[in-house]
Image 1: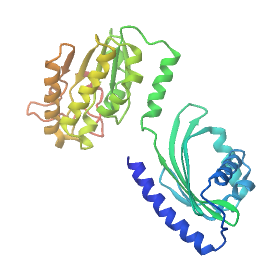
Image 2 (image 1 turned 60 degrees about the horizontal axis):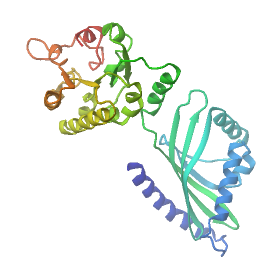
Image 3 (image 1 turned 180 degrees about the vertical axis):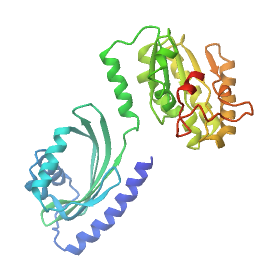
Image 4 (image 1 turned 90 degrees about the horizontal axis):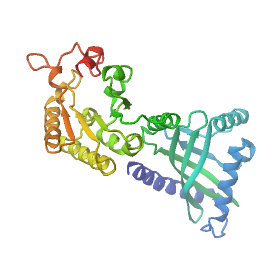
Length: 342
């Protein structure tokens, strides 16, 4: 939603600016510009020229004042200073990435047009993917359509590449039978080197991706949990949720959705929820952590296939304050002694 809103604002501003620029140029013709056929032709010729590194042709479709906003937020102008450098950039990009376009629309009004599309870039070496929502402003000058501005927003789910890496691992080797999937945030990811030894003889499939929330776990359950047909699932989420301002009730509701999604397809699988841990860095969130843990514990008590595992209490000292000696220097992630408690 935020990208749609942002693009809508930008497009409106571009339309006003483009209309003013076109009017002031006084070089447009009186043909019917609402027909996008010529615009589509210009767009395709420009794109094909870029893909083939034909920079001379490419720049014939670029307005001298053309600017762009990249998906990383960088704003720049497209300038013809050294065509050989631009050609090399194009060649390097297409050696690394393959591209596809979908959901393309062309909207023409008088001598101004908006082109929108989704650009999907796939890294040829590792299969990682970037999805960009792109809007372009084109204006008609004399008989030619020229691109005035391009704006891209990143639509890629921030964990898409991490999940794809898990999926590729599963494609190479068949998942073990009767395993336990351990899914969660960086606390699970940080455990991956020792988790097999710590939880032996249980067969573990670790699926930790740092920075994730309960909603992220729910989002990818059909991709990195269900396909393994595990006999049990261990979940550690909620830590980052609270740090980002989600409420205890929101975390509870998402966990309930997670349970429902799992048990619709794996009705016999048990689910273990590791309580949200206290930490020195987030000690101010301890009241919310306790509230959330209490809500999750209540859910687990009502369902025979759910288990709430209290790992938080053993992490406190005799005075009820979180121990600092079981954390790394960032005061958030566990050291080896901390994982021994888990």
